[in-house]
Each structure stands twice: as structure tokens, then as C-alpha cells.
Image (cartoon, helix red, strand yellow):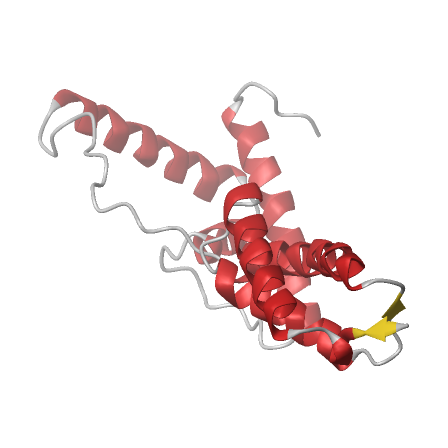
Amino acid sequence: MANSRSISHETWTHAREVLVYYFSRRHGFEHAEDLAQDTLTAILSRDDFEFDREEDFQRVCLGFARFVSKAGHRSALRNGHSPLEVEVASPGHHALGARATESRILLDEVREIGSTQLREEDWQIILSGANLGGEPVEASRAENANKFRVNLHRARKKLVSALGWKGSKS
């Protein structure tokens, strides 16, 4: 019976080439050589794997490669990143244009309705949540942060209802 320690150097080299091809072509991993090395290391660390013929070694390698591939895919998702977009979309209007004026008028109306029709503590929670000069909320502990988020959600629903916007359900 053959095991991973009794395999010839040529078979190991061929298995490495097959694994690099497997990871780079089939899965499109950029670090295919590292994954092939991880697969061969995993096989070498297992002393209990025995097979009848040396030709079965490649099947064993591909079997291990499936698990290494899954682990590599999970790692890539967890640690992967996408480049940031350099171009930022410009606003559809100028700062001194008509749309900017309409936006300012709408915001002034929202602030007036919010400050007059909501309870003072609800309005302060909304201002604090929007970082608009409301009293700072103590959220040092997780339970306080969760409580703040719940209260902010409820206060925003009350504001939407006071504004009469579509979809305001109490």
C-alpha cells in the first residue's frame, strides 16, 4: 500500500502542476500556486491516507483540492476587497441653483414640523442620529446603543407620519 510519503518526486511535481491548473483555470483564483501548495501540505500532513496504486495519488490530490478550494473561496469572500471608485457622481444641481433652493425649503419645512409636532426627546434623538447638533446620546454600552437605534427608528416613523409622507403607518 502506498501513502503520501512513498510517492515519487515526479508524481508530486505532476500533481502540483495539475493542482495549479485546477485552481487557476477552473476556479479563477489568482493565488493558485499557494492553494496548490496548501493542498499538498494537507496531504503530506496526513499519515493515514493509503491507496493501492501511485496513479490514485492524483485523485486524492483533487479530492483534497475541493476542500482547500472551498476554504480559499470563503477566505477570499471574508478578506476580499474591491477597489474604491475614484470618480464620485456629481450632484444633479448647482449649490446656488433652483434645485438647491427647493431642497433647502423642504429641509426647513421638515425641521419646523419635526421641532413643533414631535415630542422634544424624539426630536433630539432624530437630531442626534443625524449629527445635527442634538444632545449627544450616551451609547457606550451595547444595550444603550441598541436602545438608541430603536428609539431613533420610532422617532423617524413619528416624523414621517407628521409629515404625511406616503407609507407612514403607525
